[in-house]
Image 1 (cartoon, rainbow, N blue to C red):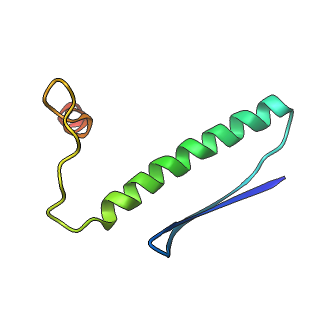
Image 2: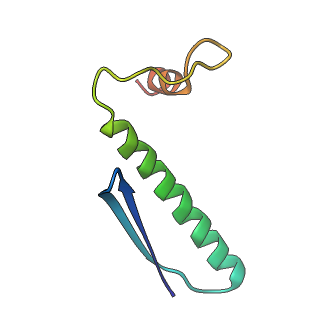
Amino acid sequence: MQVKIRVEIDGQQVGEHVREVHGTLAQMEEQATALGREVACKTLQATVNAVPRPRPPFRQAQSGTSRAVRHARSSG
């Protein structure tokens, strides 16, 4: 079974994801969940990229730094 998800932001296509989903119902569920996570990540990145600079900060975590800042610090 072919699954196609098209992502549009403000009417402009920013992505299209096509996957073949097959196997048992449990396997199909796992494949659909993985595709959903991938689409969500790419959609978030596309929405961030669509915001002109300077961009507003991410919401602050309780520790005082955003997850994005903590991730950047730990990756760098």
